[in-house]
View 1 (cartoon, rainbow, N blue to C red):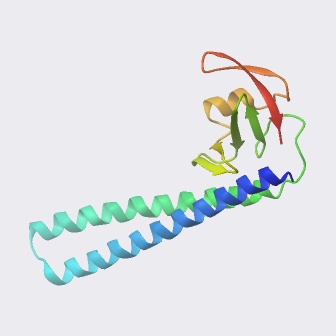
View 2 (view 1 turned 90 degrees about the horizontal axis):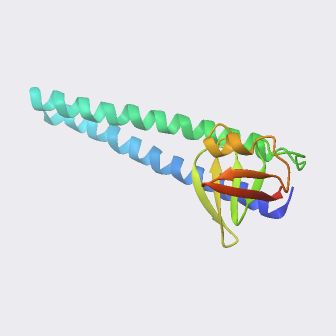
Length: 151
C-alpha cells in the first residue's frame, strides 16, 4: 500500500477512535445524570428531564454503534493492499487538486498538509467516480474534472 494512502487510513482510524472515546465519556455522563436525577427529583419535571436524557442517551448509542461500524469498515478496506485498476471502494482518488477516499462518510482528515475527504461509494460523488480509471474525466462542480491519481 502506498505510504500516503496508509497514512490517510491511519489518520481516519485515529480520528474515529477519538470520537468513540468522546462519545463513551458523554454516554457515561448522561447515565450518571439520569441516576442523579432519580435520587433528587419527583413529579412532572423529573419525568420530562429523564425523558430528555434518555433520548440523548439513545442518540449517543446510535452514534457509537455507527462509529464502530465505520471503524470496522475502515479496517476491512485498509487490508486491501492492491491498487485497483478502476475506482472502487477503498480507493484513494485525486480529482484535480482534491483527494478523496471511498470508504465511509466521516468528513475530512488532514495528512501531509493535504485535505482528504472520506466519502461513501453511495454518495453523489462516489457514484460518479466508481468504475472510472486514471485520466478519465467526470462532471463535478459544474465542470469536467480529471482523475489525476488512483491509489
